[in-house]
Image (cartoon, rainbow, N blue to C red; front, top):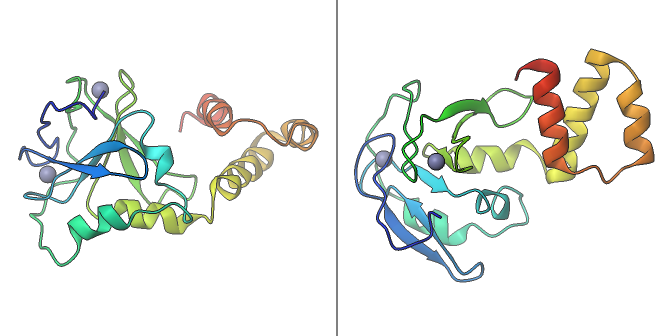
Length: 169
Ligand SMILES: [Zn+2]
Ligand SMILES: [Zn+2]
């Protein structure tokens, strides 16, 4: 788990990341405050911060009014938690933002400012899921849409996995 006391080195710039306690969640996030401004989330942390109603003031306080070193976002990165090569995935079907994901431990790395941009894409997870449903509907037909209206609480993770299988996205 990334919220242990083990210091992590930033996968983008190599600097040691700062442990930032988020008291409301009782977790430590790893933020590259002395380097590129990137943030590493472990497999259950990211979902606590990706919706607009969720509080990221402690994260923003660490990042505001700082200038960060520029990094090449196209580079392949290694997961700072487990060392596995990370995979670049779009944060949504809008395909505007790429996030590095570790398929071994579930960690995610966001470059500076990507968290704010991801939160601006959708109001909440329901809208994010609905957009995926609409895209899949247009792509593969109406069958899934009918299923979705019958089971409107399909888990977002299940949708993402299905979407990945259908599109390779
Ligand atoms: Zn960094
Ligand atoms: Zn990992």
